[in-house]
Amino acid sequence: MTRIVIVCAQASGGVRHHVGQTARLLSNSYEVHVIAPQSVLEGLDCGQAATHPLAIGSRPSSQDPATVRALKRAFSRYRPDAVHAHGLRAGALSSLALMGFPSRFVVTLHNMPVGSRLIRGIGQTLLSVIARRADVVMAVSPDLRQWAQRAGARVTRVATVPAPWSDTNVHSTHHKLPRESGKSQYEIRKLRQAILSLSSHRSYDLSGEVERVEPLIILTCSRLAPQKGMGELLDALRILRTCAPRPFVWVIAGEGPQRDLLEQARDQESLPLVLLGHRIDIPDLMTASDLIVSTSLWEGQSLTLQEALHAHKPLITTDVGGSALTSHGGATLCEPTGESLAEAVLSVITTDDALAQAARKSASAAQLLPTEADLRDELISVLRLDAST
Image 1 (spheres, one colour):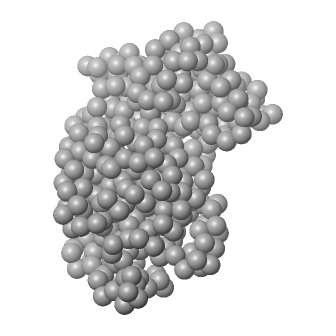
Image 2: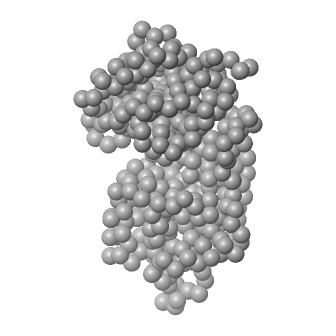
Image 3: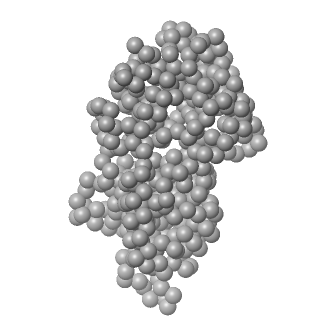
């Protein structure tokens, strides 16, 4: 039987999900081994794939030579026909461990290194190592693909990253999440009321009279981190507070290192901002919301954007990384600045007709999103597997 080894370094969120998704789809027909840190493997649905814990950190470490030796031993043991590494770290270390092995080697790049010159330089070095060995470099966004091409990668392509609940049509038996919330209208109404009750902010019109109209709920589902544009979100919120044509509350579902920053700004400036923390009911929150906004400074193929399209909700996203590719024309695109975000929000919430038109655009784009069947076909192609298996 054809043998495949999947390698992943420390990962969370969409990257972790995609690794499990890949393993699950391939393990229906091939012998698959997943090598990743225990924290990645724990609770991850890898289907019938065998899992092997190996500490692969997200940053350079004195343990890297030992990690390369461990990977080399694993490749000697399993003799894979193909190796699929996810991310720069896993890709570079696997490249070194594969020296002397004839295995086909594919790397999927999930993130663009951002930050200091040192961080970007390390990323460039890792990519150069990958480019010399990889048969194919996949990238989750067009700019990542261009980066790989400039580094000398022989074959590159944009990766397929479907949402977890998409139809597989490949005899997969794993549970699929619903495309829409399973809550009744009454339950969604109660959820809206619960969200609005968390905001101590009262919206006023220009004459100082208290508005009696129920506030709109603007939802952002994101890690509270600089790359996700939390500073830009606050800038947009400050602008909208002074000129929005109707009352609103901006709600963020997620946790992260910038929670204190957001709480401080909200409390000191009396901003209409609600921080829900980590949530597992994202489809319900989207159904209960009026507008979904992504403020990221960089994204690959965001699963949150796909969820928003599947929910047929008005969607605004910053035009960065793979966001335009992912939204398939179903979102209002804007620059990653507070001013541009505020302008985009105003263009959508000004009238009910504008909101309805944005929702229709989102629903149409949802029909164009990739499925797990598309991902499986892509994997068979790039890994050069026997499709009849």
